[in-house]
Image (spheres, rainbow, N blue to C red):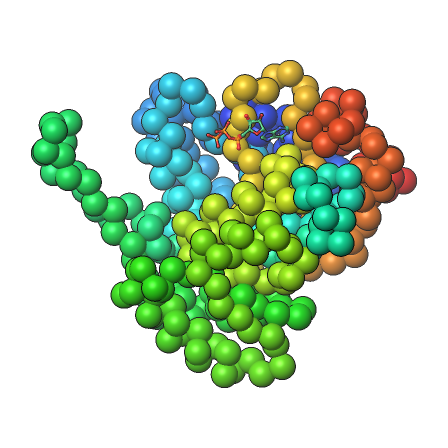
Length: 342
Ligand code: ATP
């Protein structure tokens, strides 16, 4: 049996993860689930750490992780996140954040021009350095003379390996997004690595956009993009934009990966959404499509295709939650996908 660690987390995390696990279980794929129900805000409040060393070891010894979402009102989510998600990303060196966006149904697009609605792209976000490494500090904190510094870290090794991954996923083209005109040091390093990567990958269309122009182009014509590779912070922002172009946060899936070890933490892009937690209205498709990515990551390619096909059929039939125009509950929407799988 292949052990998959399941971390439901907080808010709507447990509701949506439950539907993804039910689906995988129903498919009899030879997976065994190790449920880590103590990784949550209650544990963080009680112990000061959201994840115990023992739970981290269970994660490390699993094949991969299906993750819900963490975060709760009244909790220092930055400190809490550093001990859970950021800890996994950094200590397991999950240096790729793979965020696909695909428009499952024309009616889900917010764009007016029908010819330009088609979204089928992947944001490859550098996941281990950049602006989110936590290097920096505050001087004269809480005074009118406060100075705050957050350093952006860029390394040749870090950029080269994420570019290699981006090119390995390209079907047509790769677009580098940066802000090298205004952030010249890290920007020049990205550009140097980019030139090397382009040279190594003939036959793939390559382009470059500054992040502000990329945001405009994504709205004007998302169908122009295949793989977009970018830094941690720009990837974070642009992937919310592509998620919205493809039907909203409720359907967006992601994978935190180390392509060398094959280990991955798979999670919906949305957070714990405390505003709708416990109501049974959360869309489980982001979690279910993350389970499809997990299947792909551990070599169950046919299962991944089957899940995507079932999601597509359920959404086309309007058998989905209210955020994407349906009237089903989380449970019913999960059951609708399972029914499509037969
Ligand atoms: P966090 O701080 O944990 O990221 P958040 O509430 O700030 O949580 P999200 O969880 O990403 O951010 O949610 C933003 C909004 O999108 C929520 O308020 C919710 O209304 C909506 N939303 C997010 N996920 C879903 C979902 N799966 N189904 C339906 N609506 C969702």
